[in-house]
Length: 292
Figure 1 (cartoon, rainbow, N blue to C red):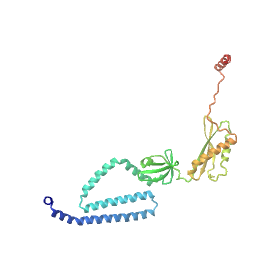
Figure 2: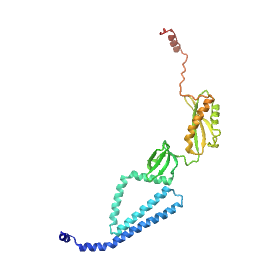
Figure 3: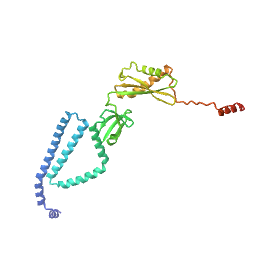
Figure 4: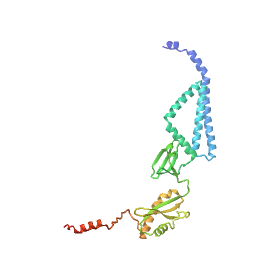
């Protein structure tokens, strides 16, 4: 058996090739170690440099990853060349593979590009209170492909960056104060000025409310059953907006009740004109025999 294998394989040629290839192999290993050490050193230097600037944490992480990938690719190509691998064929294969992957993962690539735009453009940051569509949420984490939000009901929502970048975003954290709007309706027969005075009195003594701009009560509309008023005032913390709306809706209702000012529920008034047809119907009803 060994004789047949020896006839097929030229052990002397193989041994000569291996011995001749050992220097290349050792050089490739040494180069790999050098590139690994260089990557660590460059990462630390870049991290130290970025920490002294105003670059966002997410942008710093992205730049460090990009630098690591670039160094890794350059190191792989250098090691492959040392191992006498045909780099041109390797690059061609990588190019074809990259083209196929780009078509298959175009949504992922779009999300990554959108993530980079979000990090650079900074429409919001982590821990900001934003409104996306109709959803109020706190930004928990900005990833390269997705953004993680936490709603006020403690629900975790993960949105692709491409989608969130195309939405209309309101960022309440970017402004140091927020206006609270409390809607109240009164009956048409009630005095608007009196109702305005009573509602504004509910704010007295509340140091959480900013004195400027001054609180106001305005008429926002004439509805079917009520005159719609709106109490407006400013607070320092936008996160308190909802609690203020709930609190002063209740306070306004109780204050108007104590003052005897009606807060109407939806109703319909029917006015019947005194016409000949109505008179004839009334006469027929009067002439109709009474039912037992």
